[in-house]
Length: 254
Image (tube, rainbow, N blue to C red; front, side, top):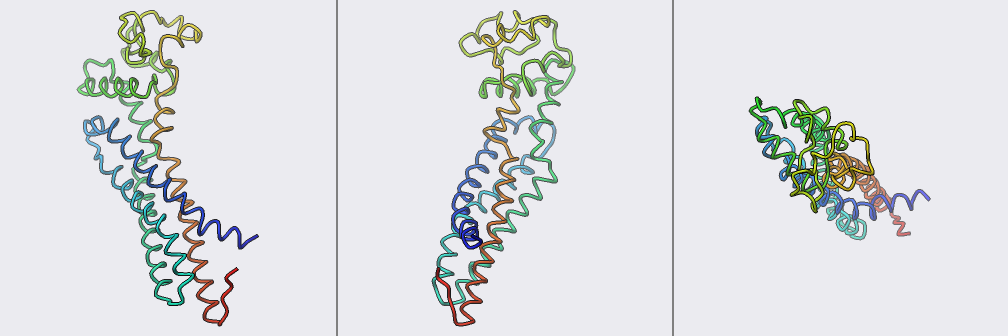
């Protein structure tokens, strides 16, 4: 049983984890660039604080995928140089992953989307704010492309700072078929805000935070990276076990 678990974590899991790391990091990087680059620049927050660790995870994902093949060679070849090469490569991969996780942690990358949405929502209707135009463009682009409304839902716009009494929900929340209608959000008054049956045919019901995280979220990516490190430790244990068996004159190929 223990041997089967070791085989799974050292050989099979890294194949899938490598693909997931590359795919997830690419998606997260693109999501930040597409949706948050301009508003982060307006807030004087370096975009590279979030993109560099994701690039490191992309490289680590490629290495994780390739390490499986190096592990097979290290086990089947009798020369210890292959085992040493595998250990060196896996150490480099773990350094990349740990560095990326540390950078994502200190920049609160997982909470960046939520914090930016909260801050920018307060400037959407604030004509006195220098960030209003950027906030409007940010929310309109996100709501139209992700087909969402508000942070957790359309009711978030009720409490938006300086939101008008009528038409307080942005027109970018309107469902595509009726998005050109001037009365799309104006028919939604505060006394009808909880009339789901009436509203669901007019505007998008999903919140933008959940929609964004489902496509570009960093939280799941961090979990994948941690599990990948665990599998790499199992790979080192496997190689060390094979080397010790060789030194004792016995190799258990089963």
